[in-house]
Amino acid sequence: MIDNYTSLFDVALPVTFYKLKTRNLTTIILLILALLTVVGIFYYDYTIRTNSSTEIKEDDIESIKQLYTNDQREEQPIQSPDESDQASDRSPDKLPQVEPKPDTNISQPEPIQSGDQLKYTAWIPSWGHTAGVASLQKQPEIFGSISPVWYSPTPDGSLDIKFPSGYKTFLQFCKDNDIRVIPSIAMFDAEVLTQILNSNTNFSRHINQIIDQVAINDFDGIDIDYEMIYLSDKDRFLTFVDELSTRLQKDNKILSITILAQWGDNVIYPSLKETRAVQELELIGKLADEVRIMTYDYTPNSSREPGPIAPIDWMENVLKYTVTKIPSEKIWLGTHLYGYEWISTGGVSATTFSDLSQLRSIEDFQVTHNYTYNEGVANYTCATDLKCTLFFQDQKGIEARRSLAEKYQIAGLAFWRLGDEADLLTPLLSD
Image (cartoon, rainbow, N blue to C red; front, side):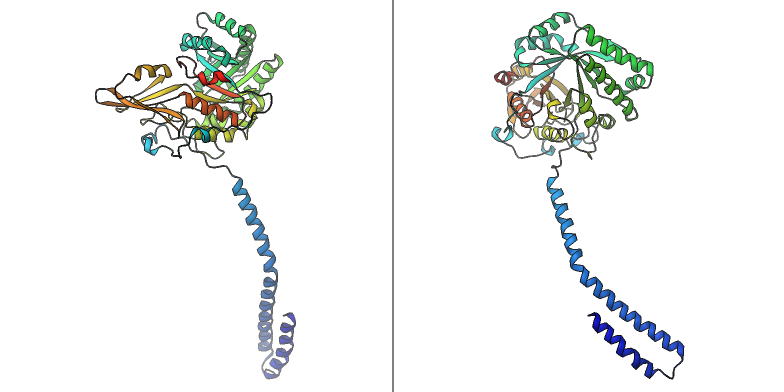
């Protein structure tokens, strides 16, 4: 093709000069430039065409790479509804819908590694100490550890201690039954925490008092449950976790960190966005011995419409994401033992599994296990002309969550809260 272009140039130029020999030199120069332009265009076209096949192949390779990348992406998890703005959209027919699955599809655990066994722990709040201890004494063989909620921080970094009556007897019972005691420090006020973190004196006092309480009472460790943290305090909070971890490790004690549920890198979370941003999973996973995820209150008690407390597919999305950030053997799946009762007029109240025995006496009480969410659901008349909907944990739900924990080979389940759950945990006695 280049030879053709060259011949055209060789022939056309003399002919043109002959015809235009009487014209002035300027016209001749312009015509030569025009011919050179035409030849250049043909040559450029030829070059592009000869290289086009290579460019197409490179594009194909890039497309294949992109396709492979897309195939590796996780499914988009269900996002929790906003506790305020989206609460009106929480009617049962607007809840996340997935096809109901029988037990065999919900719980197909992968084999647990040799020598590993799922473990169980639970929180016992100070206000529910009596009921919690009674439950523990009935079934001590279930639990490898227990977390009484006995502490809360104050602005100057000291600890507000809430030891219940008879707590030493409780500690002795745990020791006699080989149950580790890992008390929880609970905090729900970001303003209190910022005063601790941003004062060197308060910061040091806080860590020292935690270490002292663990040593004085011979606890096996401590659980940090700080649920409201300013984003501006992120670096100081993570420094606190780092220093506390180092101090506890020297004493051969356990550091547990309780965190909010996260299920994606780019999820716009409906509440406590700053706290979730502070709780950097990979770093916390390196510093803590145990990480407990609060995988409950998907539909909070502030919602005006009833909904599942912890739908099983949402819990799996949380686990699927978290195991990519934190070693699975450190992860504990938070599991609720309570229920929420929604009244048609808008009121919401917390219930326990023990409350079901009284509710069953209601004439139109209808209860079923919802396999979509793997929770119990009941509908009934709770007062004159008032209808109630109850979402609650049941034994099938416990079994499904145990199977989910086994599937991802995590450490175990962490129950909120122990007490008044009747025979709800009976399925775990077979472990």
